[in-house]
Image (tube, rainbow, N blue to C red; front, top):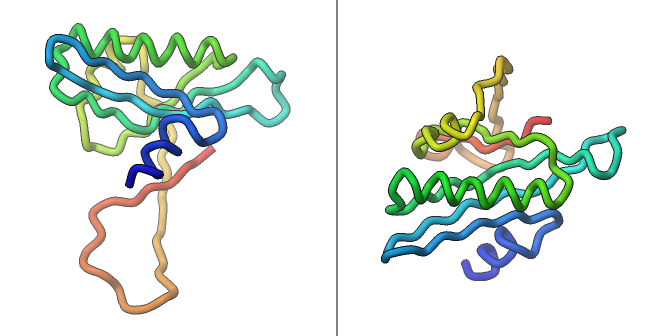
Length: 128
């Protein structure tokens, strides 16, 4: 578990992490800076993956997101994307200017190594 956290927050290529601990409240956001094929090296996209708002209030959530976006900008990101996975509030993103995209992704899951598990309630996929 610790190795996964260390990789997610700093060990992987382009890792971007923002942590806020204030007045006994904590939250963490993670993602990475991704290069865009055919674009200049300083034209990266920030992919925001984990929105772990914890028990932060609205102002703290905004501050945490602002820190993440400042880090992304310092790494050459000009745009940011965050998948809607339904596990947390997206209000801080909307308040920061994130908008819903028009892309709809249809995904199909096939298991090749045995019987189907219990019903699958979610699926993770990177789409670029």
